[in-house]
Amino acid sequence: MAKARSDSARCVVVGGGPAGMMLGLLLARAGIDVVVLEKHADFLRDFRGDTVHASTLTLLDELGLGEQFAQLPHQLEKRVEIVFDEGSLAQDFDRLPGRHQHIALVPQWDFLGLLADAGRESPHFDLVMSAEVEELIDQSGTVTGVRYLDRDTGERHDLTADLVVGCDGRHSKVRSALGMPLKSIGAPFDCLYVRLPRDASDQPNSIVRFSAIGGLVLINRGDYWQAGILIPKGAARAALADDAGQLRRTITELAPFLADAAAELDASSVATLEVKLERLRRWWAPGALCIGDAAHAMSPIAGVGINLAIQDAVATARMLAPALRGGTLTTRDLRAVQKRRTLPTMVTQALQQSAQRHFISASLSGNPEPLRMPLLMRAINRLPVFSGLFGRLVAIGLRPEALAASLIRNGAAR
Image 1 (cartoon, one colour):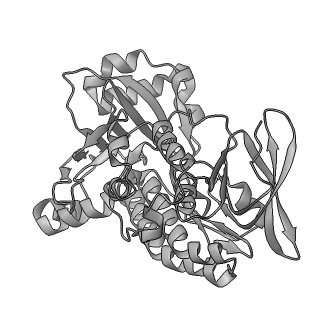
Image 2: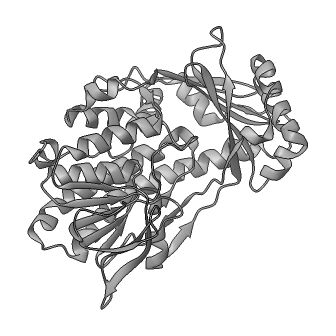
């Protein structure tokens, strides 16, 4: 039965994605009673973000989870190549500080399972699956909990808390219920995801391909390529017409070595991602806070959304744990979290917006002229200092968050 062990907690986290699971784990280790509500019965959903960046890998080491992570099926990405019709940029991560000079690619369900298992070691942690939040409980303008549906039994439960944190993604129920103002930056493209068989003779590195005829992202997942095909906004139906004939042709033209694999592709195996680039103007309300995609939906460019969300979770746990533990949480504390995380969010979104403007839009414009590598990327190719900065921004982020000592220890383990 999808029911919390208690009808109350210090904190309720809505959404069992990377931000929600990390926040739940960290608060529990700080000795704070936390309940994570996940609306699905399991974590098994395909074509979710599978990138675990260097700063997150360092975080897992600090939490004592590095060895367990290493046992999960994963690939280490040490080099990414961005190829244009004219020019290419190969980005190595060997200039990164610390022991993780790479990005890891791991099925997200395995990563979330690792965090869930670590959380369950604490009596302060409760994960409730098949629990869909339907509304917030409000008392005199302050959020004091949630009402959620047990999707297995159809029963509804009230769960009170000092704080409700929305980690439920770009279609956040928490955000919607709070009615907080949203700034839409806009994205000119959507993305179609498919799996394509990978031959042992294929090149080992992931590839990002931009051309006058379209855009393609190929991520090496061992025995298959996870392929993301960029399409103009709202053009998924046209791209999948004729049983995905246009899609097969685009893949073949952009990556000729995948011609045979693309020939076997049919529309039923394609997943569509509606790309959004937006952020809340205000992340908080009395008794509630949004972080991760619920606060700032990111474009899939460079796969930085998960890293940004996890850094949000670390900052939230570190900054709010003392007030939650003492029962003294105020809106000033919530406002401080947004203030701390606004700069990395805005700068990352500005960089994504620039990428959209300078080469993604050009690759989808229909202009037959060969697509040339932008001037900035040519400068990165020539100047090593820029190359190191580019790799750091992708793999570590603008403001990596540090753990407090109280969040590292496995406090009050069972």
